[in-house]
Amino acid sequence: MQLKSHPTSFRVRIVELLWASPSQRPNLEQEKASEIHTSILSPFSSFSSPSTPHTSFSVAASNCTGHPQKSKPHRYPTSTIPFLFSPFSHSIINAIQSNSPHRFSGFNANGNATPRRDSNVFENHLDAQTKPQCSMNHTMEAVAETPGRARGLKYPAINPNKPQSIPKPRQPNQFPSHLDAPNVSSMAQTLCDILTRTSPHDIESALSSSGILPSDECVNEVLGLSYNYPSSAVKFFRWAGRLKKLPAHTWNLMVDLLGKNQLFEPMWDAVRSMKQEQKLSLSTFASVFQSYCTAGRFNEAVMSFDVMDRYGVKKDVVAVNSLLSALCSEDNQTSSGLEFFDRIKAEVSPDGDTFAILLEGWQKEGNAAKAKTVFGEMVVRLGWNKDNVAAYDAFLMTLLGAALMDDVVRFLQVMKEHDCFPGLKFFTTALDILVKRNQAEYAIPMWDVMVGGGLVPNLIMYNAMIALLCNNAEIDHAFRLLDEMPFHGAFPDLLTYNMIFECLVKNRKVRETGRFFAEMVKNECPPTGSNCAAAIAMLFDYYDPEAAHEIWSYVVENHVKPLDDSANELLVGLSKLSRMTEAKRFADDVLDRRVNIYESTMMILKDAFYKEGRSGRDRYDSLQRRWKARVNL
Image (cartoon, rainbow, N blue to C red; front, side):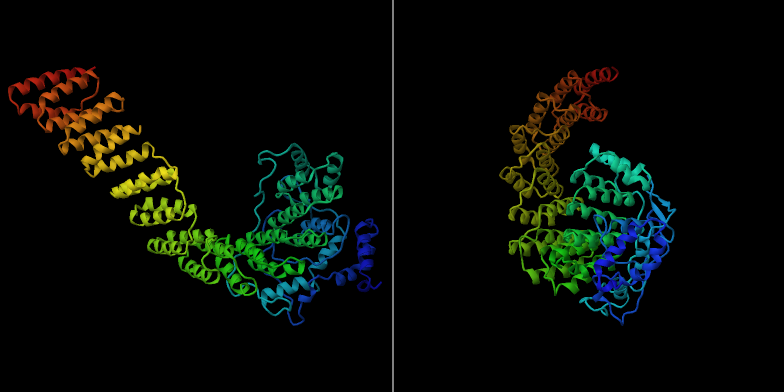
């Protein structure tokens, strides 16, 4: 049989191999082993180069339980054999079961691999994938070793001479399951119980006997909760596919599940099958990129981008951004993203999101110098565009994190001149940092740019800014913000007024304190008890006892607690002014109200009364007897 000239006959023969009885399989295997081995050609065989040596990736593979295994070559998809309802489901199961030197039959309820008792002839196909004749896989491996030598790859992969991160082994049970996820539907719960509690060999029969006809939403829900059990998930996927034609989103979930479990060979089988089913999209490759990067296989993520047009998916700016996002989201990999960007930008024009992703990567790594370079290139390529808010946010946040406040203010002014502004997220974070650093000199111009750009601050931001200004005695700016608050729909509250009132008292603004107190009372935002006591003390120090009495009267009439501090400050103030008759009358009134007079206050009163001679001592002695009787109660 000439299989190369009769591809249909080859596919039929493979189906015979799949469904042959166990007694027939050995003969069939021997009869067709060489044909399978030599005839499974990748759709990307044009990538291979005779001059390219066949080398293997030296990366750590992980078995189906997530534990590190001996290094083995990684393969891209090579088979184009259709069977049953999809051309990849059997290969996925067998690939999962043969992902280590030992054979496994699948996963038990705890997600651990179980030993396999018999062999499946389809493993011959998987074994064939590991041989040198698999052109696509060895081309990819050759590219990793000698970038640029293979035909068809216009750009080399990430520099192989640069130290790469060690691939990360998958940790078992790292994904949510139906046992801990909230709001799981009853049908999905039942199906998940079958997948986790049934022996892997009996899953499909158990599913068939359940009598459940899951909807597309239910299938997606079950797959989303089955990431810890990839073998069972594949069997469920195959079973659901027999019942109905599955949508592209479900296929994408399957690709993501396999990729997140670092089952990359079956993942690529699924990708190829999606192409045959005409369900392949950029979302699929975005999941592939993310899975490779999460596993620490950054070169392979870039090479996946290089071949995506061979699968009929366009390498446009959205694809570029998807790969950049996957790279830059990993720790210390923004340089890899920038390297990829530098080689692809001539072919695919970047947009604002491209630069935003790079700038967010440098923000995470705290590299202000690199951020400035990328930002400068963005302005040169794209000009000033008010829609690039995310890029402006990330750039300014990087400068802010590096404490380059002069640069932050300077770039804000330049942006303002070009009618471009960062978002409210930046201003909120920046204001919080400046408050912690107590840097009002930078906060004021930043605030003016924010408000001038049309962003409307809320009450929390106003209070934070006013607190910063008051802590730095910037009273005029604090009053300016207070006056503009109603125009932005942020009405002052008790905190707003009390911060300004406290600032006036601390800075000995006697007249302003009296006027502002009246405004607070009028607006039903009275000062706190501690602010009233501080104000009374300051007003007596600066010879305005009438204003101090006015505050005390308000405290008493409105039951502003506590009364003790204000009462004692008033007694001390009267003593300093030598108004002892009034002090005696006030002290009696305070004791009648059961307000505590401090011992330190009594000592000050004693000194003041004794200066007046015998009559003064008599009045103090009378007051002291009442005070002691009050204290002893």
